Image (tube, rainbow, N blue to C red; front, top):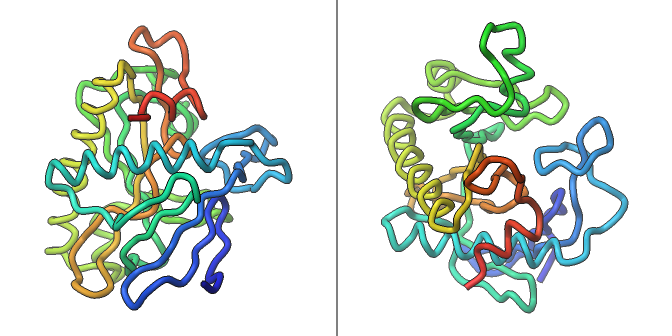
Length: 234
């Protein structure tokens, strides 16, 4: 297998005509303050032992759950011992979009709206807040509104409407699964693409502790890293 791309926390290898192999690693990301941060844009020189296994095991559990509930994902198969997941090749919406859902305000949401009265860390929203950001590390992953996505030709209005509905269904299911595990999910980011062969929408990349914040049901204790991943082991 040939290495095609080295990502922040995963490496991508060739596999088949319509598939790729993702190798999960123990690399972790840091924020601009040098702190370990799942949403950080800088890769740490130090490795976190067990990080790859934790992310892969959590991702496969969530992907299986979503597939059982009618949400298509790019996962074909996986091997936890080899830290490997075979996936369908995907076409992404250039330059890349991330789909965020927030049930509580924290992180960049509070920093963005810190001058708005009532904005405080941990605030509970009456309904989920959906955001779409452009994958642009240098630009700080700026927000983009749906009309701009269509105007810039990133996707058609029909595809966008379909994806907004599919994303909302997936987020509802993910939130429910966290609650089944005794976890209060504050926010999460996921990524969508199109199957390169069929053109069908599917959830891609990973859904793990690398891209979410969760607490125990009291909201007092943050559950992160391997401790969060352990909650999703079979």
